[in-house]
Image (cartoon, rainbow, N blue to C red; front, side, top):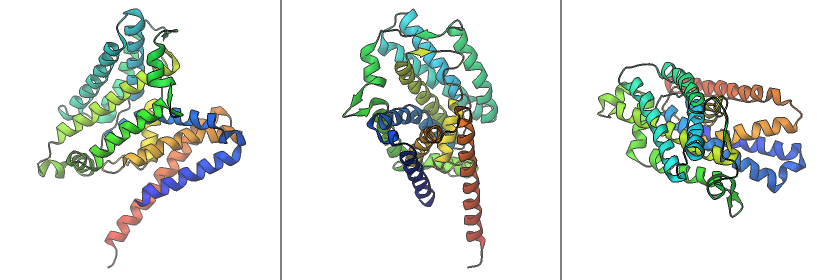
Length: 318
């Protein structure tokens, strides 16, 4: 709870600094754009955060986004599939990739870092092959679906943000109010102890990988509908790092066993606001990733300090 309160305060400080930096940041248009970006990025971060809580890691998430977005564009434009069928196929593709990653980790005992790093290269290459290494655009087609999933609004709120909040609500019920969520935390805290206590650890680790990649595929659908084009060599590039960074900034420990859905949402918001704030303060765009990396490093340092103090308090005289 203290960690969550700390990142809430940090977010409020950043938001206050953003409003102070430029009066234009207070406009409804800027807030709408922030909400839209939080929605699009937050779906990926939510998937990465759920996986991190179990002690897993997915470095292939950005390439999954690229492959799924490219595949969707090809199915819709080149193959003339109906949007519902094409989107269902892409979600199945994302889930299958997560299952593939999870099986390699659970059945063969490979390290998640190695498995998903290989996936990063494989799925990006597959995206380029599927599209003939050419950008794939939707043109002026599918206006209704774009409005429904990405470019529209409801009561003045961007659709991607509303979708994220809906998914976050489901994730809160699953992670914080069900026995399966407790299994996720137990798996991330101590896999051996969780296995000895009767938890089917492989099953829940597989579930986490499938959820992560499926949410990545779903995010790719929204991004294609929003930006109208998928470029196989670059779409989704570095998104895995942003998703992991957002989850970690939101309180998820890379050691596993820690993190909350509200924290993941806050971490996503921090990553969206930081570049905006840096730009308004005159920081060159080329240094945006430096700012994000610095914030992530600071968060990791604070997490380690708090963890060390907590451990000292538990073992100290009393």
